[in-house]
Structures are given as C-alpha cells and as structure tokens.
Length: 229
Image 1: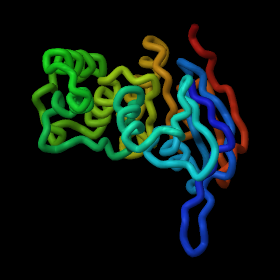
Image 2 (image 1 turned 120 degrees about the vertical axis):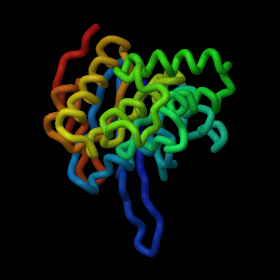
Image 3 (image 1 turned 180 degrees about the vertical axis):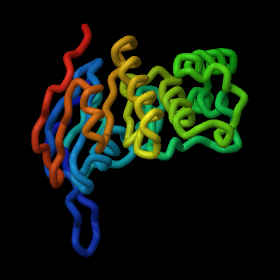
Image 4 (image 1 turned 180 degrees about the horizontal axis):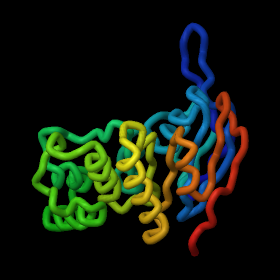
C-alpha cells in the first residue's frame, strides 16, 4: 500500500533544518500503524509527506503503483481527494456548515451527484454514532463528536488510506477512547488502512505496529497487535 524509500525533508533557512534524514519503511494494505516519538522527532513532518500536504526534499513515496512524489501540484490535489482521507487534531470543521454539509464537502469537490454524496454522508454519520446530529452545527456538539464528524468527512470519498495527526490530543479520556475504538472498528471491519501520529503510550494497543522516530530517523518498529484476516 505505502512504500517509503530514503525519505528526506530539510527546511531551508540561514541554517537548514533537517526534519527527516532518510526514512525507509512500508505500510501494508489494511494495516493500522502508529507513528510515535518525542516532540520534534519528525512525526507530523512524516505524515505531511505521506499525505501529500508537503513535498519531500529527496526520496520516494509509492502508494500502490503510483510514485506520488512525481505528481504535479494539481495531480496531488486530485489524488488527495480521490484516494486519501485526513483527520486533524483541531477537527478543521467549517463553523458555518452543518454536520452533514461538513461531511459531504470533499465529495462535492469531486463533482459527485447530490443525492449520492448526501446519502453517503448520512450513512457515515450513522456509522460514527451521529445519525441524529445531521442538522447541528459544530458549536452545538462536543469536541469528541466534532472529531467523529471529521472522521466521517475523511471517509466520504472511500479513501485507500486514512491519515490521522494527533486525533485525540484535544479530547478528554472518554472521548479519546471513543475515537480510537472507532478507528479500530473501521480497521477491523472495513479493513481501512490507517496511519496515525500519536504521543499517547496507551494508543499502542489499538494498532498493529508502531514506527518509532527519533531525530528524523526510524529508531525501531514494534508489532503490537495481530491483524484480523
């Protein structure tokens, strides 16, 4: 599913800052992987490269049979919409839109038919336990519920890979557990491939494998849970 070869990212400046120093690893189809490490280890930088939000300085990223590092800016935009889903720490919901509208927005951007994307958005909101909240606005629901809306939005275009950047960092313990159980359910039942950046040690029990980063390099990889076949 994902193959990374000698991935490097250096931020320019008077003193260039190397954030990733030559990473190589892979993520299998249907795998749930956590990227962990201390602050400044390169976790979010790595996720931004994998998710085509940023461009690496050197190296290759293959998603399936596509070397996505060779895509143009417009091709990356289309590829993100069609194949990738994102869940951010800050939810990134549009406050003027209802829950339903927030979820179907990426499908609208692809030009899909209204009856199709509205139906799928309602279905996904039911999947994440918010089937009764379709007409609510973000300020009318809790932080944990907002993150579940963000997860539904990330799934609207049936992405091959779901990327999550510290998805529970702003949540209380109960809401964080709900979100992680939802990720596990999506992975176990729908075989959704998930790559998640986290700093919480307890999150390891939800994933199949942890990739540990230190100073822009892979320190080690650990298997934590067997995959369901």
